[in-house]
Length: 150
Image (tube, rainbow, N blue to C red; front, side, top):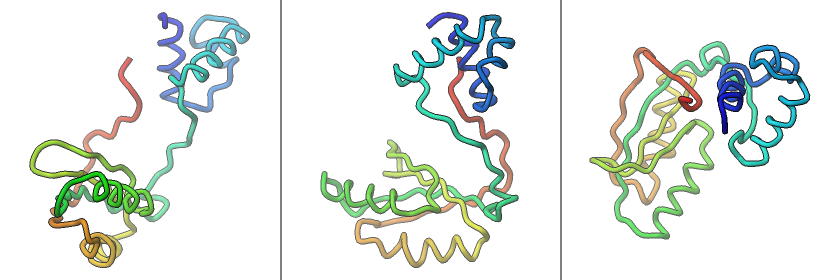
């Protein structure tokens, strides 16, 4: 990794659809050099993939909540079962095993409060591993930066 790789990664984090020609112009290398470096960054697993950033609000999923979950108990089987549940729920956009007063933090996207309540009451609370759920409704997003600081 050198300053050119950093510049490539910074540019791609802003716009993953940049062509090698556009990256070459932005970074100050030839398109063929960009192509080789980009392939090497992909091969090394530094670039894990490319995706489009969609507007949740414009697609009807403007409601966001953060849920703190405590499990009934701990152990390999219980945590694996909960992980499978999390993976199967499309409204859960991110999930983290954390330290502190919760076992997991879930980032939820829903169409509205009714959709969120339905998810909590019909799916999350009845789960056999879930002991406690505490929800925070996101009122305003101050920062939602994706990527990695370089």
